[in-house]
Length: 210
Length: 121
Image 1 (cartoon, rainbow over the protein chains, first blue to last red):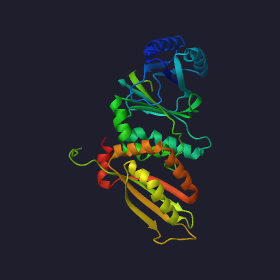
Image 2 (image 1 turned 90 degrees about the vertical axis):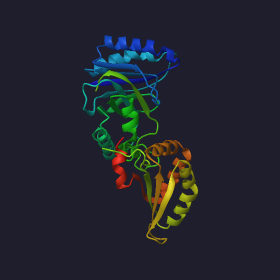
Image 3 (image 1 turned 135 degrees about the vertical axis):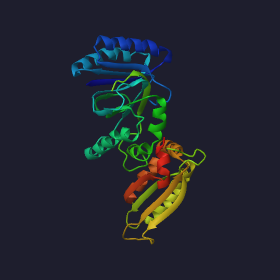
Image 4 (image 1 turned 90 degrees about the horizontal axis):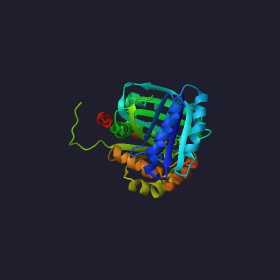
């Protein structure tokens, strides 16, 4: 699956709904296999005001849509955009029928020149988070093909939860997160390989998209 | 599982293990206490223990310095992490330390009796 995500920060949050409607209609016209276009929830950090996520059957469809979307995101109403194009990485689903949940995406940037063996270890440990933290219902870790925004985003870590408390509670507070995984992000830990600037964005989800 | 809501939240520990370059151990310990420890305390960390191995100052070989800090609970850990992770003085400190060290580790731990409660989130 060929995916595209855009985290859009707007000048006037009152305009989010209209922009979401435009983007949604455009994605439908471009035969997006799946799409999620929704305002971000409080607690997002560098996550934009609008989370827009799309999946296509092939790279050409995705590129065509990306080109069509660009003019909507380069108007004065849009302050900034962080985003990625990527192919689905490894993931899993413990609740494929999840409805009325929460979708969360983390865009992160691994240092250029990081040892590929170390990066693979980081990826492997990250993919084990749902094993230890069952509140993560569905998940996928992918590498970016193309990135826009504040960093050259290298990875996309997507999760779905039954509700926001699964993200704020078990995901954040489980020791597998803070005492194990976070060392890849922590500037005080010599294992750190991930840039401190992250995009943490989440929104309401009607049905699973992973 | 059952938990006792009246009990204090499980304490967590942050442990720095620094293998100093030969002859650097004593000076590095002094700098750690003078330059790093005050800020760490301000971030909610309590310095519980310092260990030096071997228990003598070596001038031609490495001393290993171990600092064990405690934090009130996992929430306090995140508070420490957010403040320290965004403090350029902290980053500058570790950038100064690393050339003076053969190796360094920071890891996080708890007492075994606290594992079940820490994982019950």
